[in-house]
Amino acid sequence: MFNSFKAMYFDSLPDKIMNILPGLLWSVAIVIVGVWLGRLAGKLVIKILVKRNVDKSVHHFLSRFTDIFIRIVFVVMALSNLGFDISSFVAALGAAGITAGLGLKDSISQFASGIQILFNKPFNSGDFVEIDGLMGTVQDIRFMNTSLITIDNKKIIIPNNHITANDLINYSSQPTRRIDLVYSVSYSQDINKAKEVLAKTAAENEFVLKDPAAYVGVKEHGSHSIKLVCQVWCNGKDYWNTFYSMQEAVKHNFDAHGIEIPFEQLDVHIKER
Image 1 (cartoon, rainbow, N blue to C red):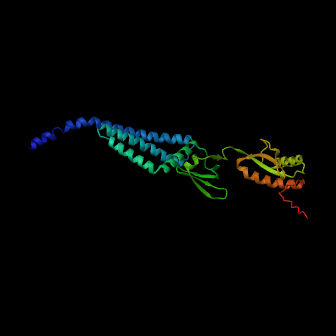
Image 2: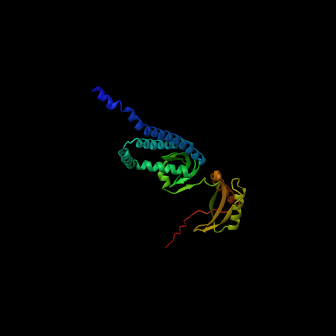
Image 3: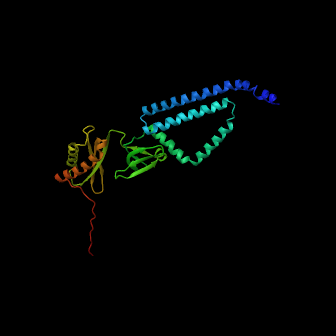
């Protein structure tokens, strides 16, 4: 009985090994190639991210994600080559992915928006931006959200999908900015003299650029005054210095030249009977 058992199993073992050996070696080769391609793809991803100036904190994550994804694909190919039925495994994995996607759709949307922001680069850290009415300096850009620091030093955390779905204004994207300053003068004043004072004030301001030159003109005939516009250009980093210094200097120069800045007033007439 032992001899028949031995003949059935042990004597045929070399033949069985020889039958599966080519497929096993081929599967091992597939896994090795997958590991090599995964590492190569991970390094290639880092080179692409560096070339596009993507934040360094993202490099390791995307590199590892690419590496692991490629390895999993090649392991599945190796198992399929050995004759394993992976269709049920793939189906279960797909169902789990759909379930997770439905439960985490907001997070996935934020993550996808974060990838879009990091690659398209509508703004960088340090830029002053306005997003759906919220203004501040970009402090940090992450996969799920972006944080801003407001002028009065408040921190705002905005989900990335909210950023990509709304209007965005990047005030730091250009090296220079134009400031439109509006001043009111009385109808009784000489507007040519007022324009000369504004032009001289702009020319003397250390933050105002000479090119493009400042422009002064009549903007509007208001109900109580003539409104003059003074358009000046400055470097983006000097925006607020230019704004506040011009406001102060114009008041001083108007006073020095006797130019009246009118204010709204109400005249009440009492009629006696």
